[in-house]
Length: 233
Ligand SMILES: Nc1ncnc2c1ncn2[C@@H]1O[C@H](COP(=O)(O)OP(=O)(O)OP(=O)(O)O)[C@@H](O)[C@H]1O
Image (tube, rainbow, N blue to C red; front, side, top):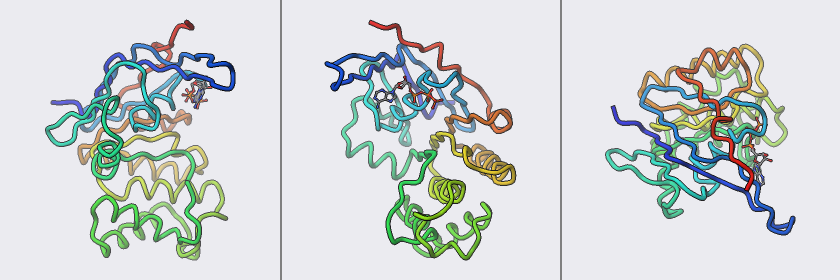
């Protein structure tokens, strides 16, 4: 079976321009694959480079060397060299990303925020709205909040809106950066079930989960990112 995501010898340093161009190596020679149906959990201590690696796959951070191949149908696209427009198209149809925090859009209600993500990923308007409602209900977001903008929601409420946005459409690759950090046990269980459903539908999931129980429930494989620790130049 072909992997949906394949990293080959990926390296990255941050250049701190305010510190006279100081280079801070983060990862070096990082290689990993994620196949359909897998949930690869990135492990390792704080600062090891887990989020940076996930952001490189999503195309938010550029890598300095190596290849990051994400399969779009039969075609592998190298995120390391792809045009921004190609990466945006991949994000619409192929690669979802759920971060810990919701980037709040002013004045738009929670249900519409989630439905809009569904339409962007190709769902028809009615289906997007129905699925948005179903997901918010599944994630126990009280209905009285559905038409309010999430700006004033609690951390856990915002996180559930964010999860609904990321899960509404089926994309073959799903990147999860601590999606359960602010959730209570009941909602963590819901997210574990949602992840399992994506895997069953053939998605490749790559995620960071600090919660040990969640990690054990979802991981088909744990990759310790410290093995990619970069040596200071
Ligand atoms: N934009 C940035 N500019 C400079 N340094 C950065 C930047 N992003 C991350 N770093 C540094 O890269 C290193 C790895 O950070 P990263 O967030 O990837 O680690 P992590 O393993 O996800 O940590 P945590 O578990 O605490 O979230 C850290 O030393 C961090 O300070």
